[in-house]
Length: 424
Ligand SMILES: NC(=O)c1ccc[n+]([C@@H]2O[C@H](COP(=O)([O-])OP(=O)(O)OC[C@H]3O[C@@H](n4cnc5c(N)ncnc54)[C@H](O)[C@@H]3O)[C@@H](O)[C@H]2O)c1
Image 1: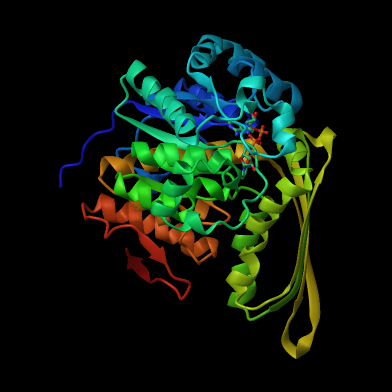
Image 2: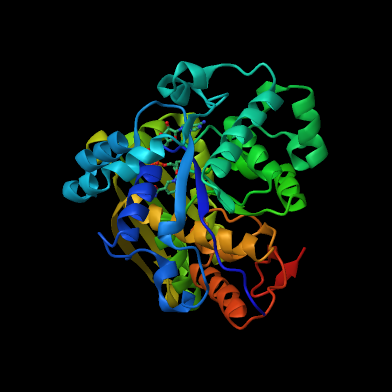
């Protein structure tokens, strides 16, 4: 089968001035200019050869944020705090970064909780007169960006701060429910993530929700995205402690070692840590981090996920995990690990991998859940299987099926019981 070739692809980032968004923009620009290697990018490894993914140099960045700054200033801030970029190289791409400023617009901090409200500017904090108007203005910003750069496709990525979790709302379950909520202008029921998700889904643009803000992909938004022909996936990028958990926990299963306790303690600095210091916002994160273990092991166990804000660490997140397990003759043993990862350095390449794969999916007329991206998420929507090995194989199966020129059977749920793939 003859495949369409990729054109220039827009990447619209909600949270465009954040540490992660900045690392995505800087990293892609440096790698496209061969000023850094491509390590960390899975799509640059042999299994992806021949897949005709969009080149890093063909990506054009824009987005919304609620704070005013410039991309270069954000990059300089990341450099000062974490030393993750080389200053000389940053200066070499100064003009490229300045050009992205023209494509960043003020988003909405509407109903995102006190911590986000405090860091947002006046415009972002404005209460919308009508929710539909706000959605239209978000869409207009993205469409103007697409037109300005003559982009064939735009992939929308949510990398905004973690919001407090949404209270249960039955109207989110259906598209009709969301439409009625918007028609009634019921502002209390929604957060910014819902408006962003709805706006992108309605445009039929691929959506990646890298945050724990599940509002972005509530079931009603998923229905809309599918209807408009958009592929989508979330929630909450898996980059650190949870990644290690989902790789290690299956090992205990493979040897019938019973895990009694898995105690995890995370400390992190920077703005993400500051936002997560608010107990309301933290609740959303703990919910996505805590579900993984009992799902992999298949039985309940004592777990704890602690997250504390330690300003001096900046983006160098540290996690200490203590695993207490039982073996033959009921003998008890333990495993401990310490993970010290630079959050944005781990996250940025997998966002770029997913942008390329989402663009590829839409180019190949695939719509709905991109379950093959589950290995990148803490709470993969529609995938009950959290075992990293299974998830990774699912991605390889998808890639190999395309390389063999076969049509992928479609997007569907992936059941826990093993390799079953249930097309929608
Ligand atoms: N390893 C990782 O970096 C990683 C892993 C998994 C998930 N995440 C999630 O990605 C998100 C971004 O992480 P970060 O480290 O870049 O945080 P950050 O605080 O540096 O950046 C978040 C950005 O979002 C902006 N923002 C807040 N509310 C917004 C809104 N309603 N609309 C538009 N912009 C808004 C903020 O002004 C800020 O610039 C967080 O939700 C985090 O939990 C990150």
